[in-house]
Length: 496
Image 1 (cartoon, rainbow, N blue to C red):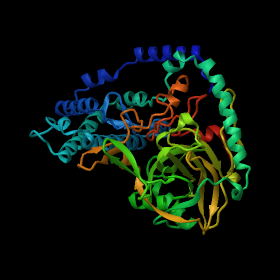
Image 2: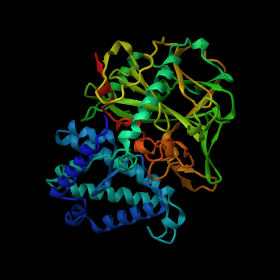
Image 3: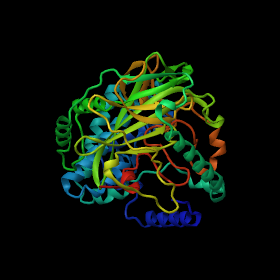
Image 4: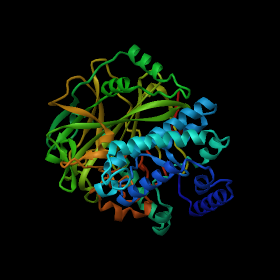
């Protein structure tokens, strides 16, 4: 969507008037709803300590006025399906779970000084602090749900801020600055498309191809996957919510092969670790970090599995100079239909850059292009594979860009990798036992700044080029689009 400054200012004015005329503000909720005072005061003190220490977990967003709820873009969009009482309750419980997950990480990421005084004794036990959070969360929700205006007050407040700064765009004269960016983006996309026209065997190799394969992959048949997906949807909202055992099977079933051109140490994906004060990559321990997300396909909720790999740096001659720097990474997202079949694979660099779609050709009627919006980049269709084959992702050296998606039966030079839950990155143990997220409170990976942020300031993305946490990937310079927007597929594709 092309940014129109006058329209943006008008929108801000309308939003201001809406909030000014709203019957209940978040501040009024806290004062007038007569919540249990001890719990309200405890969560307020905890929030203050978290903000002072700069350890707020940015994977989800607090709901203003409801200190026991957090949301994401899918849960915000899901309110359209939560029409009856049972569905509304499930959605609220999901938001409560997100808050508990976030607070648990924050409690363990707090420095010792931040923990003191929050509970009994000078040095309260973190597990007991979290138990109190759970108890207060339950008490506050139970209290609030008794109100007749609970849902009508809550729903308008479940809004997720975007990753674009209108202020930066105005100060940076976006309408003018976007012109050369648009030209450069179009040329870059053509260059990438030309790479996809080259036969895989003729692609440039700077070092040697090494295949990073899942250590314990599984190969479930279509019937098993369909049954698993059916069981996971047995909930009021009919969202595929696999239990831990089902999640483990799905994650291992769709773990992909990363075929990396290794020309230097920075081409080896590995385990993310703390070393001194900084984040480093232990290439001796190959790892891929996974998490689940959700979207819509033809208006129905679907499950997505995300696989993130991390490198020590973006470097070498392939990468533009202003993109080079400490830490690099790639996230591959596999989206499953109601039968558990992959119908779309996407990839982004962990900065949110270079987003590409690879849909199943048989399911797409047409690719949709909108006026004043960049067209979706679809350089190839999803490869057709046999049961003995896995999807392979060919990556170049240094820049770590996807060169091709391939059906692979016998990968070259296979090296096993561990599958690790992504949330470990959001509360990663140090050598002394203290935990700390590799991301700051704004969702930016620490120590991953790029010169790009000075060149592309006007595009409105703070610290553009830095590696980012899930939920914070802005994927377009010339419109306001996020990787986790649940309506992305229906916006860009007409599915059969």
